[in-house]
Image 1: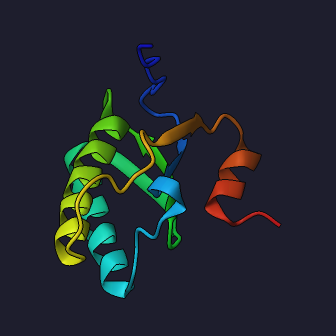
Image 2: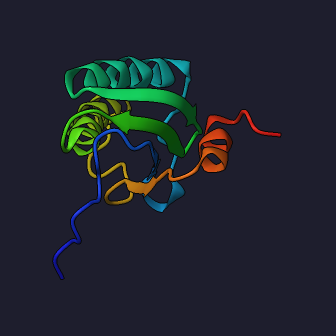
Length: 122
């Protein structure tokens, strides 16, 4: 079955989630978090995506981001994912997939959802 195309209009914030395959650890120490954050920044700049908030857990990531270019989020996540998987596999002497398929994305269509994703509400 073909994948459904992503709805990714420029200027609309998105809640992005990327999970580790089988809930496995994707960040084993602080160096991993730092590398991911640095590459996230680089990819967001390259593909014109504003990253407003993030949460890096041991086995998944949440991002709140607004693309300013067509397909910016997809390109950012693809670049980031490929680079991080190479790093992680090389660092921990492993092979194969790290992420559980494609990242998930939801349009943030109201202020309450935006604030919840920003972890500012309440």
